[in-house]
Image (cartoon, rainbow, N blue to C red):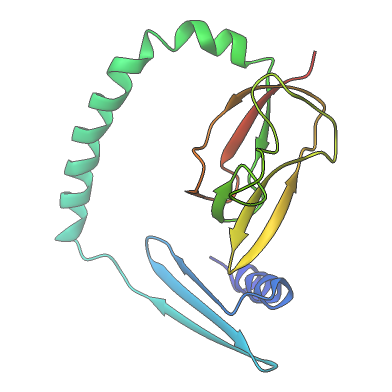
Length: 163
């Protein structure tokens, strides 16, 4: 990660209003804390020791063949259908909710038509509920995330048929 990327992350966190963000990658750990007008950033870099590397590389190949073997054949037919579908993805990390409150109806159901700027769900991040709007028009074909589940940035939430 380059210094420019770290600076952009700090600016993004400051503008978002989040009080603390932690980012951990293979060789770097970044914590950005904001509050009372000042921003504090801690960056820790560590080299992976050669003794740890073989353990990771041995575990990953054993796990990978088991996962793709089973779904490879059944996934072939739906892949052709999914190619024409558009995806609504999560713009932030947080907790996914299909309805505005527990006593209200879901924003969308399978088969509902959505247009650009239609609210399809809310994602709670740092005690703030963010309405997520569809960027595409079409019919909801599949809901990919369970209610009250954590979601990541860029994670697919809905499949939409634009036709």
